[in-house]
Image (cartoon, rainbow, N blue to C red; front, side, top):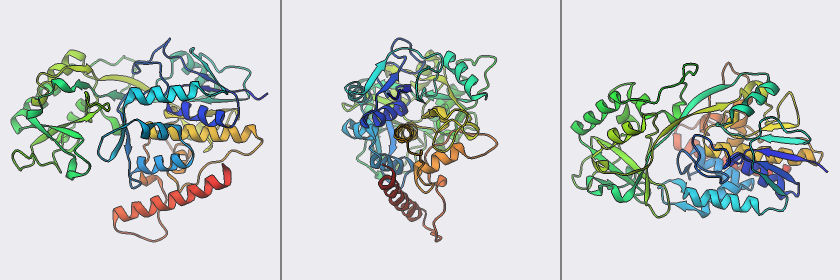
Amino acid sequence: MVKVAVIGGGLAGSEAVYRIAKEGIPVDLYEMRPSKMTPAHRTGYFSELVCSNSLGGKEITTGAGLLKKEMEMLGSLIVEVAKREAVPAGGALAVDRERFAKGITEIIESMDNVNVIREEVKEIPKGYDYIVIATGPLTSPDFSKSLMEITGEEYLYFYDAIAPTVDAETVDFSKGFWGDRYSKGEGDYFNCVLTQEEYERFYNALMEAEQVPLKDFERAVFFEGCLPIEEMARRGKETLLYGPMKPVGLIDPKTGKQPFAVVQLRKENKEGTLLSLVGFQTKLKYPEQKRVFRLIPALENATFVRLGSIHRNTFIQSHKLLEPTLILKKDKRILFAGQITGVEGYVASASTGILAGINVVRMVKGKQPVVPPKTTMLGGLVHYITEPKEELQPMNPNFALLPPLDKKVKDKQKRKLLKAQRSLSDMEEFTNLYL
């Protein structure tokens, strides 16, 4: 009998296991949590979200929205459960994090062909015909050493940060207003208002605040899409006004004017009892976070139920090591999936898990592994991380990954729509041919 293992129960690992087991193929799923936790996770559930409860935009004219639609066509478990556990978030698909992870876990643990092994994997397990490595950006040190031996390459790395969460009952809602930028959505964000004087006091305190020191041997390389707020602030006094604190597209109903600055709070659960500070990922020390963020008027008396943190995110040099099918060039039994491959974000991570699962199933059945065309968002992502380049930087799903249209279209939104329609048509053809 063919033996298959998936290492890691995150979004990518969950999708891979689900795809393989649904085809009647027995699979062992290794997950070290909760016996050994990571610096970011809090539970032993599969697919726990740690940085945000948002899975990106819903519209197919957004990178994440188009990718989720492609994933639906491929039978995604993550998208199915996310829709079931969705919470209001304007144009984004956000979920109740605990219900989402619990739902994924219950489905996987109930599958007849899945054997869950709750222990840390310290080296590549022997005796398997195929192995999917989806240990994520927080791969344990011991397993990292084992991976270095089989890849023969050093790791690239960057630092990712988590934004704080506050108790909604402790927010002063008189010092802001509910509303989405440009009045899109149904007002799912609370906008904490700051005057110029309040902003300058906040900015100065942020610049002076103590950060968690990095170890001497570590080099701080931050992913541009998830910069700590203090790193953004170092780039100039007005940088935050064009980033997470930008007031553009927001009108305070009390004054009829655009505020000088805002801090947006987003619901973390269906009940709206938990609110996260949008774009406020940080590596400040815990006492400093409370002191500085309480200078935001609406958060003056806020209770922080979860403070921001910093952790090392590790990914392999996929452009040297992997085929576009996600198969390791040096060992065709091994596939990689998730953020460890260099894709960035929950949706991208999960999508590669689906592809890894599809290719394991095909190889078990004696068929050739496949990869979606470059015109699809999934195809664009995996081609990006595996094509030759000087250095691999983490990549979110975005329309720049897709090839140009046959005809020039000046209107940006129309161009995106036409690319999205082409992607979905090509993905439909791909699924009809190979699934």
